[in-house]
Length: 160
Image (cartoon, rainbow, N blue to C red; front, side, top):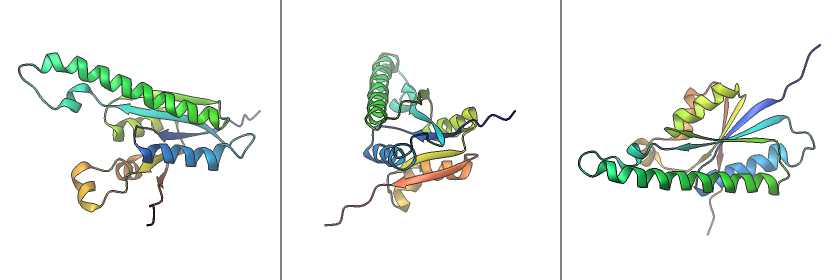
């Protein structure tokens, strides 16, 4: 007897508008119009390590890290709550939401492996070549390293 388990789609979420757009686009195109979606949805937020967010060491660092970590936890909670509200507003109830600590590139690729995902969806900031080279592109990294299909959702530019 063969069981047809749904494929897994992982969506990276963070506090930026590009991530929100990518989530809404994904819900609109893969989940909302279908009574029985083809995918199981996993949302993941990468919470940076406090030490990497601060980037300092030495006297006083130990006093600052707990404050930074508390702020990062609050941000993660806001991101998760907003994503859950998007899902509820789009009648998507079968969703797993995870917050994992680490660099977003690694967290997303690790989540794909953990859930044996067949698709990863990430938003694009739309950075140019220079900014991408300096800041690093999460979507570019995932496109090259994730062991699944990677869909990069770009928010349309507003034309004046």
